[in-house]
Image (tube, rainbow, N blue to C red; front, top):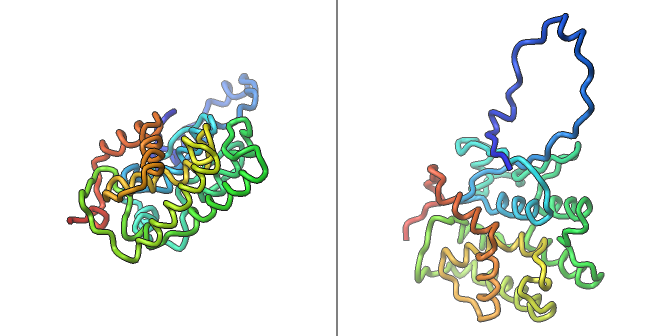
Length: 249
């Protein structure tokens, strides 16, 4: 999996082939372009983490196109000032898909064997409902507890406006684990719901949110995944910081 900066991805080759050489050359067989996934900060971007996990869970081979930290559009998204979220963005065989919920559905359609959604109709309906809730809800949690994988705030006092969001997420996790047996939200195989809730697990760890035992075990399971370990290790190596998201407590 190659990592490409957005500037390199946009660059075009200069110069041309001599006319004689061009005349002698034969058309090469058409080769499908390799999939790419545009990402922003690993440390701060919960949406990038969700899209990246979905692509990895699906088994998709892709290049990472990293948006530079000074990109104005990506910065607005991280600070919750953009009208919508356009990063991550998946490009695959002519399709361009943004919004992590849409990316998850697209990857499930393309790679059904990966099991991003449960095979059972009722479980699949439940999964889509909680994924949609995560995708569009919990605004107070997002603003009060921004993702920051480099930070840890023991004993952090959660703003009361975010507490109902935390309680609802705990309710979702507890219901899914009880209904489907764990260790992941919909059984023994990680899927779309786990990818969408994974950044919340990191938020709870960063801000020392206490969880009931089954939910704490689920959080440990998510953080122990090789993909999460890889992402977090890379996030901690990022040199850039966004002052507005590095709060002092």
